[in-house]
Image 1 (cartoon, rainbow, N blue to C red):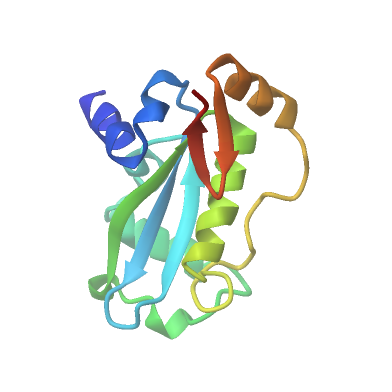
Image 2 (cartoon, rainbow, N blue to C red):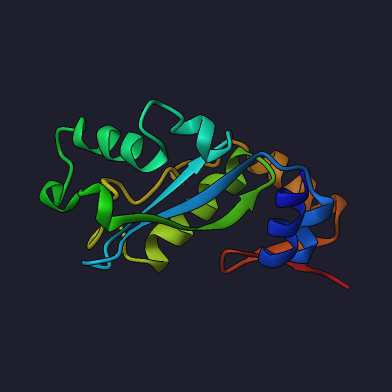
Length: 148
């Protein structure tokens, strides 16, 4: 739990008072610079906890996709989990963050993401707005801002 608290403090201190629904993470190819942005409601070691470790399991998942781009670059030694980028307080927020970071890192057009993210509907927007209202927050440019 201390890891999560430290992560929340580093990303945005406002988040430490909100519920944690899930995480946005980034895998990066250190040779090409291409990356993958993903989301999970589980810790990465549980999400990709198959035999062989996180990176090996992630590569296997990517290679199993029919339309995976840049397959020849998916070499275990070249891939690293570079960072946790964000924490979502609900499904809507997590999807919005994933969409934001996929765009920010250009991982759909130039990286390993096969879509621009899951931010396609307003499902859960009401819940997200209620959480923001209860905490005097606004969501602007991928960040939660405290309204004083």
